[in-house]
Length: 99
Image (cartoon, rainbow, N blue to C red):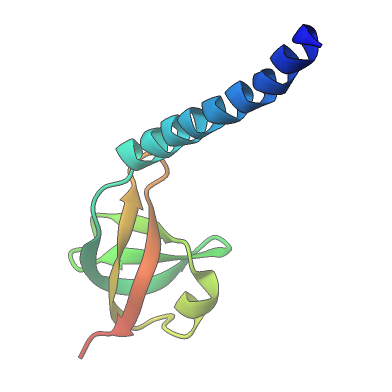
């Protein structure tokens, strides 16, 4: 019966280690994302994707929400979100027409 008690403890120890792994993954993801920012530009087609071209035409950002971006194709917009600096993709939290 002494072995049975040790077996019961092992799964608990494993469960306690999982959150640490998850936190490490979350930390790695957060490290490559910048804080939420607002970008102004125009939604344009680049290949088969809609992207945000900044106001001066020097930078293009992939847009995470292609469905919402489709409604603004060819229009000047303000996009708020976080930028993944590795993929240059804006994870959109807000997208609206600039007036």
